[in-house]
Amino acid sequence: MQTYASVLLYAIPLFVIMVLIEIAYGYFVKNQMHNVMDTVSSLSSGITNIIKDTLGLGIGLIGYTYLVEHLAIVEVKSTWLTYVIGFIALDFAGYVNHWLAHKVNYFWNEHVVHHSSEEFNLACALRQSISTFFKYGAILLIPAAILGVPQKVVAVLGPLHLFGQFWYHTRHIGKLGFLEYLIITPSQHRVHHAINPEYIDKNLGQIFPWWDFMFGTYQEELDDVPPQYGVLKPAATWNPILINFQHLWRLIKDAWRTNSFWDKLRIWFMPTGWRPADVAQKYPVAIIEDVYNFKKYMPPASTALQWYSIFQVLANTALMMFMFYNFDNLSRNELLLYGAFVFVGVYGYTSLMDRKYSGMWIEAVKSLGGIALIWSQGSWFGIENYLSWGNALIVFFMLISLVGGVYFTLKDRKGAGYRAALA
Image (cartoon, rainbow, N blue to C red; front, side):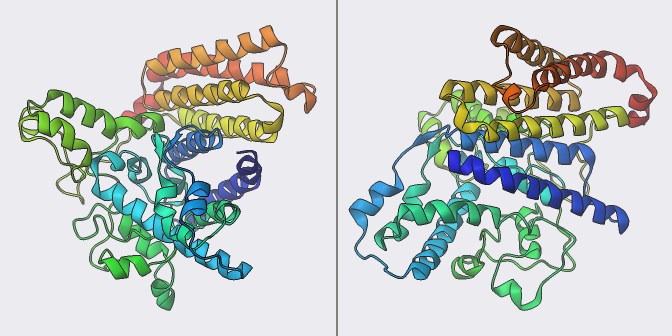
């Protein structure tokens, strides 16, 4: 996990810079693909996912090393060929995992956050899951294990394969000619994120489109069918933590409410969106019927709240970066506590973005808890070793969060900016 944290110290600034370049480009060509609150929500989702993965939260069903030791029947000697085979095996595993996420109720909960944005831009690429409780990825790498691809090769290729999926989340790049048959492109991935009937569950490849061609899941972007983005059961929140568990909560409620014991068991493994007949009739769930004429989620937000949300996501990104920079010096319990502070912070300010009164109280708990930690321990996780006035800076941030929570819950709603947003 330390290695992954070190890689992220370089990757995260690059991702942020690319998002800023896309925003600037959209501004100058007068074709903006971002709105502030959606982009902040996407970046916030990325924060939670990165921290969760870095801390290794989840239960591994089986390790890849074990599979290699027991299944390998050959050992590829050529270094370059090992990496080629490993990368192709990773991509096939990614395709299968992606297929499961789109086709099976339980697994959709682990993926829905990635599709939850009603926009399509580089920021939404960072909407990644924190709801994966069981790590089963190694099982999908059995072909690599049989071919004897070492664990260290998979460890190196994994982040490269993941980061290689970032760039094609954009509407500013059109079709790329012959490359459409060689790699996943922005055009192909726009289709994948679309909720148009023609596009649903298509283009499941991650780096190479070969698997889509082979298994019949390829769909070209059609000139007369502009992609519409989001999910058919809209998230209706900017809070990425809530989005991660919405579908799971619906499954739990449906399993509890149905009178059929068989349905209680099979609902988890039925096709995505399937519900017991008795529950669906008694507890209907709204679904977008006309993908070209639905109202996007956009609660009123004053200019001040938008700037405050930008400040919060940048501040929490900085907190996360310090956590990674100081990773080796913190105990497991300290890392978990640090991660919890960031999670609570994300939950708090995104609740303010949703105009929820709970946001004020959550921000108060985080802020007062952070100040109490510094007062009792004399330090914010050793920040004074790198910045002499670091503790004072953290206290100042906590006070801003405390005041911001109160202001945007009680005062901002009465201002002209809020009324203008309602108009």
